[in-house]
Figure 1 (spheres, rainbow, N blue to C red):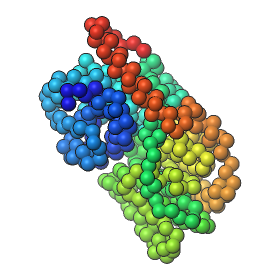
Figure 2 (tube, one colour):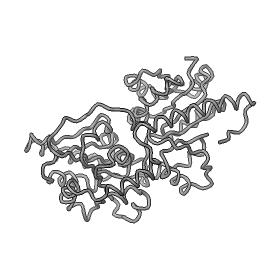
Figure 3 (cartoon, rainbow, N blue to C red):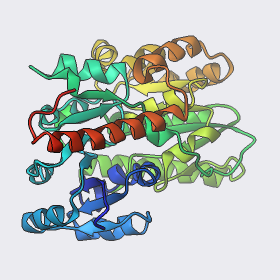
Figure 4 (cartoon, rainbow, N blue to C red):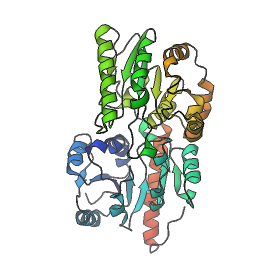
Length: 377
């Protein structure tokens, strides 16, 4: 382990492990150039991640264990996939460069956190993310931002859905967030009606794939609405077993997108993943707060998508049927994809990520050779 150059620090419990898991394949690619170790602070998460990767998983539950581990490893760069408060224990180590990579690209307010000021670099997808930080934070040093696209979307994935002769519509809502300002879920206000409307579309297969935290939510309204959706899907599958209507409560949503013809989703990373991978296919966004002007301002993706709210959700079946045959927003999505991902094509983001990490590994060594000092762009 003494040759580890790059660490990924993760302090979340197993319900948040998806934040790290989506980076594992990319980190395994990075490992070929710069040996990677995973530092986890929760034993249950460590056990889960060990089953998902060949990378070494190192457990450091206490701050003392963490500092001892860092002293023994001598790594050069640490990556962070979330804004856990425990990250600040890791940031104490001043002989490594600290990089926030987040766990997706979305227009949620939490994506431009003041916590970003603590890191030496912040890896972002493209121009939309840059603007999110510059306009959303006071006195933020934008030279810390490094555009890398979305390397997680570059890697091939085995299909998760069975083939179907029908057109497949994916409903992929997000969770309720950990604070009211970060609540974008449509599950409670629109979810069951969205499912009923999708089921009305001729020659369609419905796939319900909620955010992992929807399935474990302790908020009664979310749990009840999720349960109602599951019952509706099950009843539809019972009535028409050949249709293939189904829910997918575990597994990688990215492995499903290639088999889907349209998606209904909330403000979340899922919509932008679809924009990156399935630009040629229609997307419908939800507006659970019935505030279209704010949605357009906060989430530019909504400007090249159809939007449904409490007033218009009853027309979703007709809308989807029309869009599956007449996609009016294709050119607008192409332009918007450039806004979010700088025109990168599938396969190119990984190269940017590897180059950016390599440059930081080299920078760290130069800074130590020069006797330390401020990190410059």
